[in-house]
Image 1 (cartoon, rainbow, N blue to C red):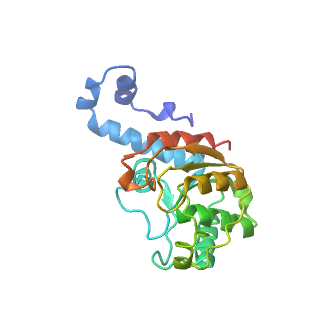
Image 2 (cartoon, rainbow, N blue to C red):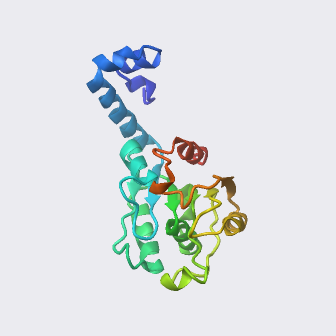
Length: 219
């Protein structure tokens, strides 16, 4: 069987059935089971490509935690400190074309603007099932824009998406986040006052965000 259940060791199935003490006696089988589930998901499911924003996402950022937990793939840019839109778009295109499987995009901050810019120019948008766009950076803002001169204007993206916004995001006003969601045809999620929805927001592994991402997987 190619199902996850068909690959679970007995100790893990036993634990999930309601016997948590099995975890204490079967640490290695549980770890192997997690590795197997990740391998199966990576083999048969869509890729999840992580698109950090300006200066990258540090080890405590939920994007980095998702990489460690789920085996997501970060699109590593050549220059995180001086981002050039064309270079970042080309890198995303390169990584996307490395694998024929469809992809889900997980973008944060400038990564959201990258998603839209890439989608406006690429001939391969059909490979993307959807995008989770979290705390977009407002590159049209008069204070932020001059620091990122090649990133305006913000353009539309064509695939299914969920945009998550925060009331007190220092890099994007809440009403601008709502306007971007409307312009992009994104389902908008109001996360309350969570700052820039990053490592300082206290989200931990952010399982709620992962649930939203999974709703975009229709492949």
